[in-house]
Length: 179
Image 1: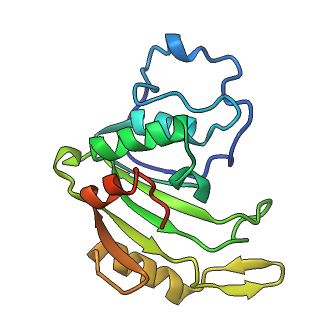
Image 2 (image 1 turned 45 degrees about the vertical axis):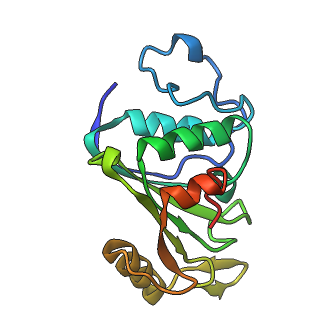
Image 3 (image 1 turned 90 degrees about the vertical axis):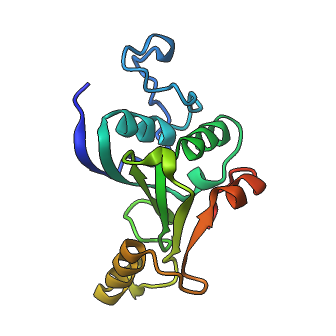
């Protein structure tokens, strides 16, 4: 499996046939060591593949449907394992109707393997309200993008927008990462 320093991805949301031709029990790359996603929902399959494709100091930003932050069962187990490993550095909640073909809200999950074992929290940004209507879509304006980047990069605490959420608080909430 080829590995990378940086990965940016926007995989198909909730892909229904992600296991087509794949035997997860015999996966020679061990991509599912933190859990096997539901057979009818491939969001975490893509995320786990990306995680395995990162070098030991690799970083990634993956756009996924907001549901990955709170759905239960197998996805909850995977989410808990990833949080405990410290791989999730941050989550950025995005507005609804931002992407063609879906009206559901999305998020960016920021993965970072470097010093993951020392991570004490996940920085969360609620950027769901910073947009402009553009016809039948929503669009991030330049100031919206700059605010997301500045707050996330500098990890600025900003009321009702961005803050560091401790791993203890996340555990208290059952590893639900809903912003």
